Image 1 (tube, rainbow, N blue to C red):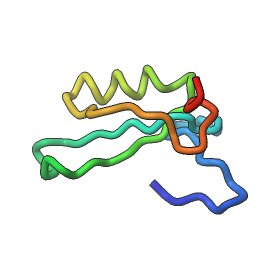
Image 2 (cartoon, rainbow, N blue to C red):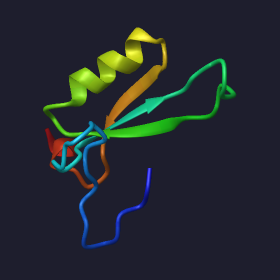
Image 3 (tube, rainbow, N blue to C red):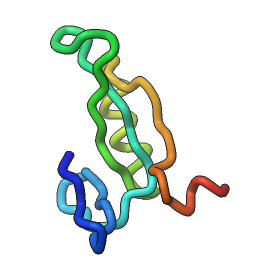
Image 4 (cartoon, rainbow, N blue to C red):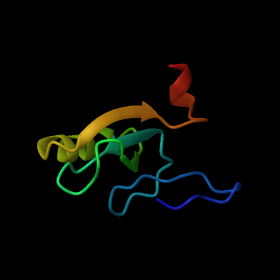
Length: 75
């Protein structure tokens, strides 16, 4: 994940999607990463479920949390 410049909103990690990200999908491949390591995909509301399902089907998904500064935090 690259850090956006202050004038750029983080975008969804789904292929071809340019929508603003609202969620962090934190995951870990237990065969490659130590237990404390977490990688992050960003998701817009439309891709939260599909990206999460992809990771969960492989046993990689650890948690889904609102992206800091996202309007999702208040809901």
